[in-house]
Picture 1 (cartoon, helix red, strand yellow):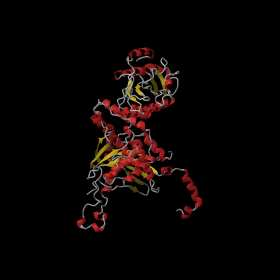
Picture 2 (picture 1 turned 180 degrees about the vertical axis):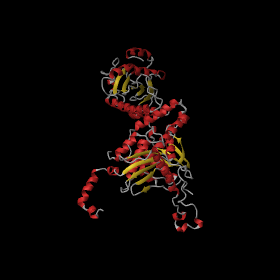
Picture 3 (picture 1 turned 120 degrees about the horizontal axis):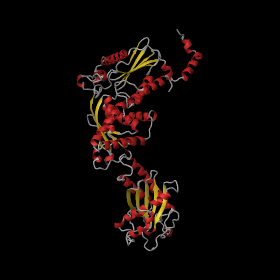
Picture 4 (picture 1 turned 90 degrees about the vertical axis):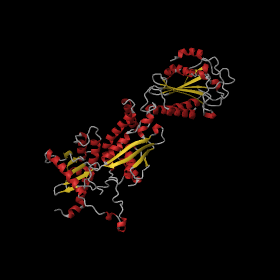
Length: 213
Length: 191
Length: 194
């Protein structure tokens, strides 16, 4: 497990050409990477998808090449320390946007279940064609999230990862997944902490992604 | 007795005479039993089906008295009436579902129960070991319940599932066949 | 001999009505139910209980004999039930030989509605009401002959039996009933306490 302090190591891992601009990329279309961690930090579910709202095609286009998708996992796991700090700051299960990883312009939102499972959503806006400075480098935190404020010009809700609208959309998304997660966990053949292989659950997550993001 | 009348009776008893219990409790209890059986029998699903049927049989033999005491219904005139009783009164008062009775054979000795809703199977996803989907009848206990209950009222039947939405089928269907009327207790009536 | 006027006198009637309304039906019934016997479908005695203190008891053996005998008599009464000719079930128009095909009256695929067998037996001093469930279990209630129907009591006894005997997972079917909860609820209900 990567700790937050080892963030710097991540920078080394980032491929030398992070800006692979797909010809299909649209301005306001986000790419999402969603993962569920068991209470014992085992990843039990992963899925990648893209924005579907506003004409999005629902396909994820991360800034890493397809061969470097592990970056998503690195980034998302490196935010676990923040999740652990943030979980005590309020009584809610939805922790909203908790972490930003500026080098990849990756935003992470978290949701905790009372049983200790963590739902983490990484969202990454597409590379802006003109912008050389996407997000304010170096600043990543739960409290002072100044990142991405420079991107407010975009008209789409989804394009602004920290806007109240986005946070609300993610809340709905998380809640819907929480409901499906509970049902899946109630299956007599599912053991706690086991990988969720259920195709039904995957379908529901995909549907929730389509519906809210 | 018509199907409608049976439905009314079932509805009435369900509303007035039945103690309700949390559905999740039932579902999780039953699910745990099945999962445990699968584990105990080392995923020998034929054996699990058999055990479930046996458990159901023992339940049915007892439950029939409760059914008769609560419903106050008399003897059914024929097997079609029995089918309606099972579907619209029995399942209604014990599980709050009313499966559809259909697919009768021409001799009126076999029918199917189609379950639109199966409270035992809520949340359930069969193990993905590649065999459960083809071998396990998750709700097989219901077959045993019918067998036990009907045996107590002098009907020997055979019941088995032929499809289950849990397996990816479109419907959940149980096939019930009348084997014979047991007449050792009753003196011969039909000359 | 009571004069009918006495019965009709409203001044005398009203206190009785009040009394009746004060007490549940079961209370009044309780005074008229002497005892209960349950016989399993094989004719074995599985339960016997008195509901009034000080009733003279028979020996255990006598109760067993009584149960077995009653079971036999019950079966006999069923088999001697007079059978009407088939024609009486159908209209005279179709009773010609040509139309003598099996009619609905005889086409029961099951024993149909079998003859019920002995349902009540009455003497000057008591009435015995027998209720046989569809599963073959018989409930015998000994009651005061002057009291009305005992259907309510019978149904409740059956329900309690279903609840506290049949649903008791440790009760073995067809075996003598030793379920404390059944005794308790039966006694309580008959005394009108529930």
